[in-house]
Length: 112
Length: 116
Image (cartoon, rainbow over all chains, first blue to last red; front, side):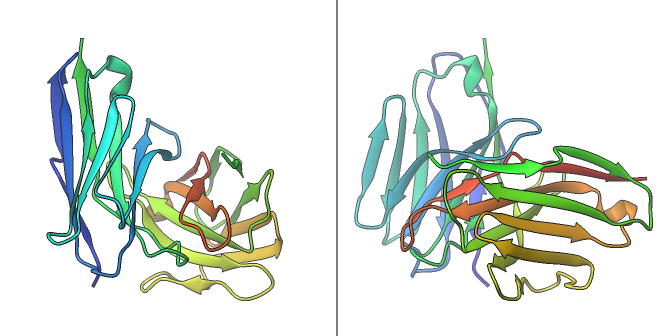
């Protein structure tokens, strides 16, 4: 079946360093790839997304890259801050279906 | 962005009882909503798609008689966990799509269900 693999499962970085989280999807028809941040006891919050017709997208300290050929996409957070500590989920979807396949999550800890 | 609310945020119920969770789209209409379940330290797993005015579509392995879904209006979907058991204890999250034909989903804040 369709699945999304996400690595690493946990990631600790020093404040100010960069963090990279990688996902691989299996459904070649996927064309929308959102990233969500989830804090303890809360629902997921969209932080950035990318569509299949774009290779890279950046929003301040956050960027996402997409390699359609390899079916990989990655989240890059620069100049990390303690408030970036949370669980991050990637997802893959086909436009209009809204059926998201989520990755397994990455627990990011930014050490002050 | 659009706002999705859930009520209650936390609920504790006794084994064998039923509990209802509400999901509302506050400033937009949603003909479709989604229900997810998330166990501790795990990912979100889609349980079912709630369709306004028609039956919900359940994912494989999800018991439709146990997890009753009603989408009676364009802004409200409810999930009722019937005859709850401790193994049903989980974090339940709903979501709703934004613009029709678009990409984004908006997630609710989640409901923590504890069955004792």
